[in-house]
Image 1 (tube, rainbow, N blue to C red):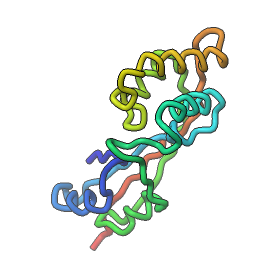
Image 2 (image 1 turned 120 degrees about the vertical axis):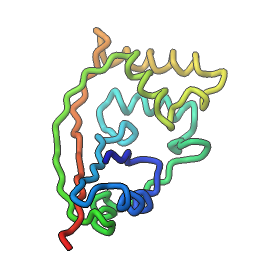
Image 3 (image 1 turned 90 degrees about the horizontal axis):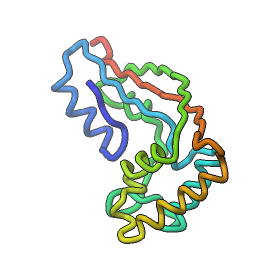
Image 4 (image 1 turned 90 degrees about the vertical axis):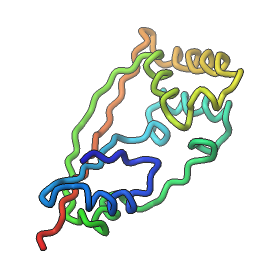
Length: 155
């Protein structure tokens, strides 16, 4: 069973999955490091542009992002799927300006509606900042995909 990790009550979803996943089934929660907290210079520059347009706090839906400080593995260990294993997979991506903008527009923190009629101005600002980091419109990213597998304890 696939569970997206963001924007949901993880404990409640895991509890509901207990009735839906086969007795020997596995729940997987996965994702990579957040663009919002990444430390590469070009990502920091893009984040600065976002903050210039939208303010310092990370957007989330119609409000701001409130992240808990509990590891997902800890939440899983308190769920019916309490036997947790992790797999880490290194990921290398090469982004272009258009892919970066497409990604940003798919997120809750930089969705187009947040910018209103300033969206073209935002897009221009991102393109101008990114041009400082690449002559050929490529932006490398080293990331890590973390997969957490949760199984039920043998009872």
